[in-house]
Length: 471
Ligand code: NAP
Image (tube, rainbow, N blue to C red; front, side, top):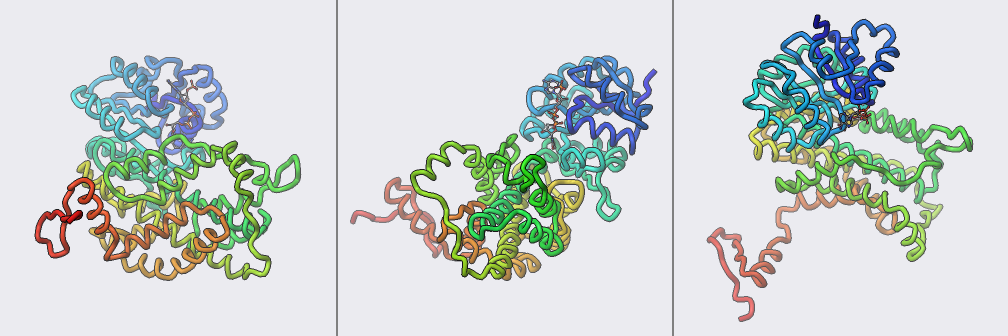
């Protein structure tokens, strides 16, 4: 006798928390996992929610436990595991059942899977879920791709489990097939940029100003009261303040300076390149993670070139700290402008009609990049839906004009003292390049025509030309 309204496969960090969230806020849920022992352990530990969870030791049992039409969430490792689960489910399901891939899929896979299931009678939804463990349990930001009809069928359940910003659920249907996973990818690309820029500011405080983590924690906590207010600034203040139980010192000082990546930030940079939108701050953040992992090579290089030296003790520290806040704000505007420009470009390429204001709205709570800033982005796209770039909107151009002064000073200071700021520098270069009406590509056109006879366009618009370069 079917007891559940929904099913979930994959009781890892995200799946187990999402299942508890659904059991608590939406409906009875049937759960399964490749390693079946985890199903029993999960059920045993579900406390008051135990009666709302149906533990299943096989996919057959899972399908049998859900009332038709069955929505089944796959929350496993992305990639081949998802294809394997779909293949195993297909013979067990009936027309009208809904498969929802909620992992971090590459959106190209989601487009492919949507096509493969098109004539099967099954409905496929590709759904980006952000907010990590805590979000999955207490309310994530949910980005849905699929048909409008498919979304309508799961909308009440998703609204019941999503994060809320001022009462509004952070979930939306963003477009067909891969739209939800694409937007999640760009979310993660922006997250990479945000985290890298914060880390660079930390680097200037540590290596330039010689500040202790506790002192930096106080500054980040103060910044969290201002325009930089966000989950990631709050996390930064808290991680900098945390003590190491073994040494009694700051925990951050005991952590290896080498960060991993699972690929979504890299996909964001690759997709930006593929659709021809400049996202240099996001690209720099991805490259910085790669360099961070090259610990042994960096150690060897420091032996060759010597370490960074502290800034002169007589420097105006309070002034620099104010400039750091400004720099972070200006660079953040550039990074978000790039991320939204990539989404606008992809929207046109893939025919998704991505609702940019809605995307900013559903990122205001539940997800890792949630911030007050996104409320302002949402308001900007609502007021100016056809805008080419956030940078030139009245609200953000005014903010950029003011805060870029600090960014310029910080990038200059870092460059002259050898402190690496790849993402902050890329943000400044993007801003300066974007706002220059007469750029330098006239010379590039000339060079290309010189060595490859590629031709060039003239300013007077009189059609293609070739230069008599060797005459
Ligand atoms: P996780 O804790 O490592 O759990 C992975 C789950 O996938 C486990 O249930 C595992 O089953 C299952 N699995 C792995 N390979 C499988 C296969 N070949 N066939 C069937 N099941 C398989 O991962 P997670 O952090 O929950 O992530 C799940 C998905 O959510 C991923 O796509 C991830 O990128 C995405 N995501 C993660 C976060 C985050 O903060 N962690 C945030 C957003 C999205 P076993 O127990 O049998 O190994």
